[in-house]
View 1 (cartoon, rainbow, N blue to C red):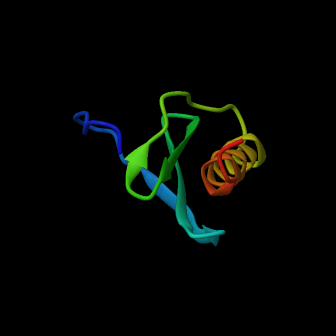
View 2: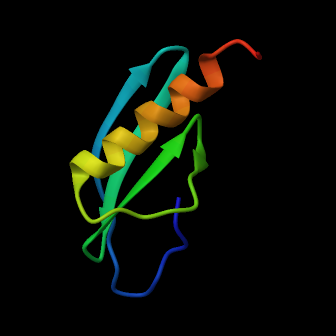
View 3: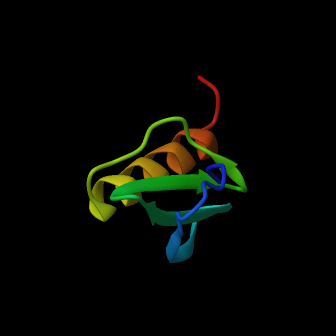
Length: 67
């Protein structure tokens, strides 16, 4: 998750399963963040829906067999 900043408090919105993966969403200072299996993705999002989509998309990509 993001580094702690003095006076900042992250709000854990939800944790869910997508395929074989755990996806966590949280908001900090008006930005939504995603962690997949405990590793934070590098991009933040403006909405919870966008963060959810990013998490599910990445989980789906990891679950696909190599071509």
